[in-house]
Length: 325
Image: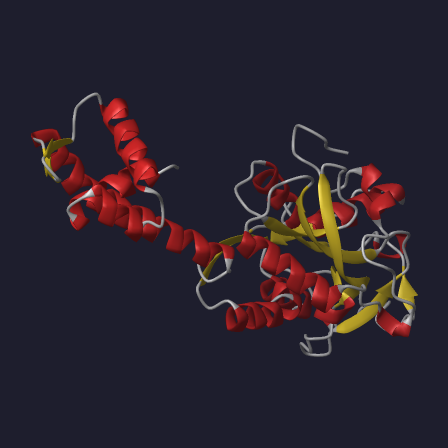
């Protein structure tokens, strides 16, 4: 946006002549004259009549001067707002988070982000990990909290890895077992997350690998409700260990799930090659600062960021109708 000819014209009017205007804009008088001539050529009308050593505005010049003052003021406001966005003083962060685990993992990050960037509006979308995929794919959000592995069209930063545990009701025959398999639970009714949740898919995949379809007695998107249902003896549900540990419902039993790939690998995901606004980049920097190495249970060695990238080929974080596995 080249406002220099307009600014030169405004200063000629303000200063009462080309010589004074040239001093104000730190240019030669010839440069100012050429700038005003350029503006006149662009508009197609004369803006100034030169009477002796004075320059008087024409009718067109009066309109351009009046409108030009506002245009220059708006331009200055525009650049000030852009500078605020560039400096992460204003803007918006569009973030998609799944209900499972977000309060434990991401709430502390929200507090830090808000403290550092109080002028940034955080627009939160809440779905299951699988549902967030299509929203992220469409560019409606900047980031999604999702379970690894993800499809190749996404970049990701690993955040947390946890084993899955089975939550069994009091008195269940396997309540005291050190671990259980899906096949062990074949005859127990299942309380599962709704189909848009990655945990639903993970459990169903594990059951099918074991050769059976579970008896699903309830589906929900509310962890508290599911745990309460298990506590009444309705069936078994499955949660990451760190989340299950928060629930102490009337003797509810937590038993390790002994299944291949029975791990909950949470990551922050974004579209590969997507432009990230300063507000979005600041969020990613914070996630990397806080979770630059994946937090593993039982003090097992952490892995370097993005070292799970080879898992992305299986496409489990898939776009419905595009890259479903």
